[in-house]
Amino acid sequence: MFEFLDTADVQQALPAGHEAIQFIRQWARSAVRSGMHPSFEKLPSKQIELAKRIVKELEDREGRPVTDISEARIEEYIKLVSERLQTLARRQFPVASEVNGEALLGKLRLVR
Amino acid sequence: MPTEPIVLYSTSTWLAYAIAEQYYAGDHYVWCTPHFDPSSVPPISYSVPPSSSPIEIYRGLRKDVLGGDRHSAKIAANKAGILRGVEVRRAAGELSDADAAEIVAILDLADIRDFRPIIFVIPFHLVRDKVETVPVSQRASPLAAEFIISHLPRACFDTIGVDGIEHV
Image (cartoon, rainbow over all chains, first blue to last red):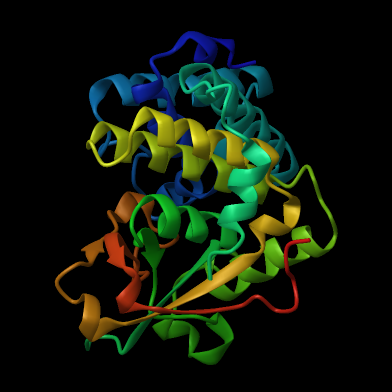
């Protein structure tokens, strides 16, 4: 699922993907509770398109609106979207060969 | 809110905090609320669902970290949030591609304990001119008091919550 994210523009996909995750885990239900129409109004149009596509794909898979999908299933979709975003980020921002990731993490762990 | 809050609270992960400290010069992005724990105020004063409160987010993350849940959706969502931050900072010219690559590499290598929860305690008077109100459509409840601080300097908050969980 969400294969289209693999070839999406990273500048659009990372913010849109996170927005979609927030939407499916909380905002959609909150909007319905408050009588509002769920939307991605604050995003630029290209990001709205991607975020809506993520939501539509999982709704099509489930055959029901996101607000009616169980929490356990929503969690599975969150993980899938997050994995796609990480794959995209790795491709867009490849680590230089001289960079030692373990050393970077070790240095970061000194932060207090 | 009938009156100005005294303190705002936000729950994040240690990794998100450390990345902001290391790569964003201590400039943090947070969602926050004046209500830390729903059980501490009358329901009429608190409309955030318990699951969205800082204390419950803290408990949820803590449970997943202590349980070694490598497939935690909460941690997956946090990773997506960190990546969003990378792209927003990069697009704003605040982060180089090389530093973005380092953060992506760190995310790949991070241990589950690096996602331990951390609570931000933010005196309101220090951030009065920095808070933005969360759009109603994105609040946990339409009446909930929720704020975004896009640029929160380290000098404006304290942190709590290592809670015995440390990285190995």
